[in-house]
Length: 117
Image (cartoon, rainbow, N blue to C red; front, side, top):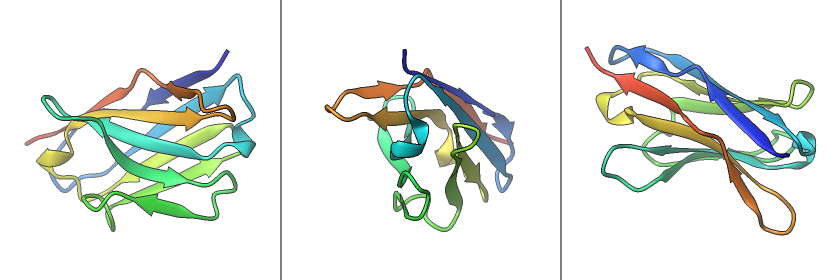
């Protein structure tokens, strides 16, 4: 079965950095575009970043452009999100997502990132 397991969240000070990971299994990771989303309390889930199956193309939400970098290691079936210059408004639960052929979407359970002094 499809599994997505996020890790790497935690408490970080404003201006700090954090790297999230998403370990994938149960599908052909190297053939699947992947994405990161986040959801802050009281807010809707929003797209943070997406990456093509080869990693050759990426795109970002406006609020994180220039600060976050999405990457993947197809040999390790792992998706990453490098976050820098973190702000309190980046505080959220971060999820990775895959949509497989046929349109079924799968989400991980998320990892909490808290940006606070």
